[in-house]
Amino acid sequence: MSTISRWKQNPWARLMRLDRPIGTCLLLWPTYWALWFAADGLPSLRNLLIFTLGVMVMRAAGCVINDYADRHIDGAVERTQHRPLATGEIKPNWALALFFCLLLIALALVLLTNQITIILAVAGVILAATYPFLKRFTHLPQLGLGAAWAWVVPMAFAAEQQAMPSGLWLIFAAVVLWTMAFDTYYAMVDRADDLQIGIKSTAILFGKQDLLIIAVLQMVALMLLTVAGLHFGRGWLYLLGLVAAAVYFVIQHRWARGRDPEGCFKAFLNNHRVGMVIFAGLALDYAI
Image (cartoon, rainbow, N blue to C red; front, side, top):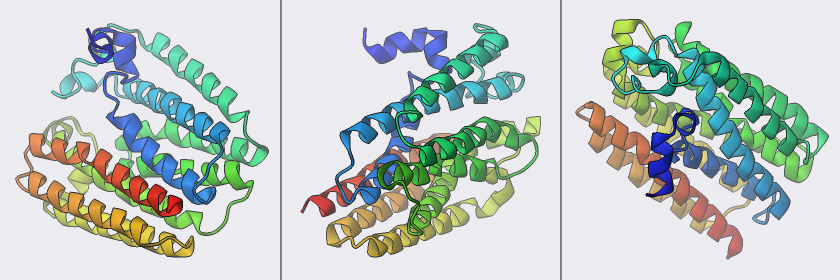
């Protein structure tokens, strides 16, 4: 039996989404973008390990607090009705205990960096902990997720440079918009259920203009990454990675144009490849 198969049978592993590594991959790619930009293509092994482990831990913590926040509604959504808190396999108090244990591990990792990074990490925890509750109050929870997702960018620069140059905010903004785009695809999968139970999302807010607005978000994200590349002196290999990402975006729109849940979910998953080709172009550009 594979590791993923064993995790699918373990409620604690499912609570932390260890059986669904796509979320970790989606967060790792912008983390690596930031580290490579911040370190001129050669991040320290120490920071590479700290941030890789930190992403894994914080993604797990984010999933736990998300399920805690949604424990009373996940049972009414087809895609989430079998989550451990919705089924009662794990008690809410135990899930909170796991969340705080994961935060302690993340704290131990960030204490290995520097003062600026530690201060930024506190803000990052606040963003990660509050995001799951935004869907009760605003149609823009995807914006909250984008900010939480992108907060790794200033942290990476602080860890590598002990400074926060202005150019990093171009990358930050690009990650926010990219995250909003792919998480809107994700929200489109649950749109019918969310409308019935009163949960808010950009998929509901954008309505019939959803695919158009996703395209605009993706286009602006690529423009910001292009400007960031010029700011940091990157060349044609990096730009080639952005072109490959644009091709993937077009493919995603073709899959999702019918707005059926399967096509939207497939488009969401494909963003792992978007992050990968951008990183590949960036790493090769610095190497060559």
